[in-house]
Image 1: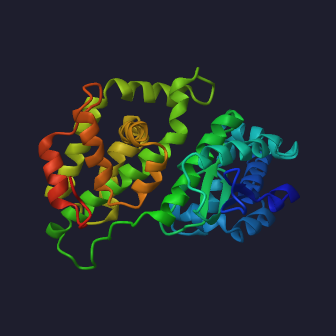
Image 2: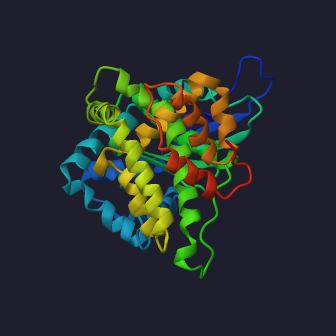
Length: 351
């Protein structure tokens, strides 16, 4: 790993802060090794052995739902045959050979963006892991409070600003993991019929997570399209025009989880995917952003961090009060709001 990546610990601080509270560092090893091997057209045994030893490797296996590291290496060996991956590898590996100026440039922008929402008393040391390949632009795990992952294969034609926004988005997920109380998983052996409340609360929790993190990435909708942002910007603009339908979609998904609960996590993810995967333009992100943006305008940026500490139903319930007074905002149905109040599993739920 290059010295600058080892040494850089960038603290997110207000000017008056005496000592760093929130810090983050960059780990490039996985992205460097894989992009270089993809550009070379082969993943040799020596490089494969190095990849096996990297801390990013089990995270990639987990995110891609692969059987083991051997399966990941088999997947990586297919990338040179994929033109999009090969082109991205050429750009990413060239950036590393030139000293990674783009990746260095994002640090200050990330620090500035997070400072706007994270209070000075919050303390954590986080790690941004650059990966290459996989099925996501960026990801983090609720049970890993220190690491976030950014797939440089998806950012080979992105500007430093666009990359910084994604890194800030993912780092905010890490902040969330320190602050939010994740809803309980279904108890082992629990009857499927008893899982509805669990899954509804999970959907509310996911809306808070993605909606507040999208505060960092949503600005691409307000700028002229770039080669990187064109598809994402178009999707956000389409979602903005059909936001009333997205509210209905979210309500429908929530009621489906409550009345016909999925038996396990994989089945829950199919419902989650309707809102937060690309098949339907990641519609849930737009809804989450609309809610977070309205709450920020009403209560200020500091309210976003405070909401992370509350029951996720408050994200919807407090927004509903704003929407009822503003005809320009899409409101939830009163029946859905009554359902949220009745089914949310925490005593802090109020109206």
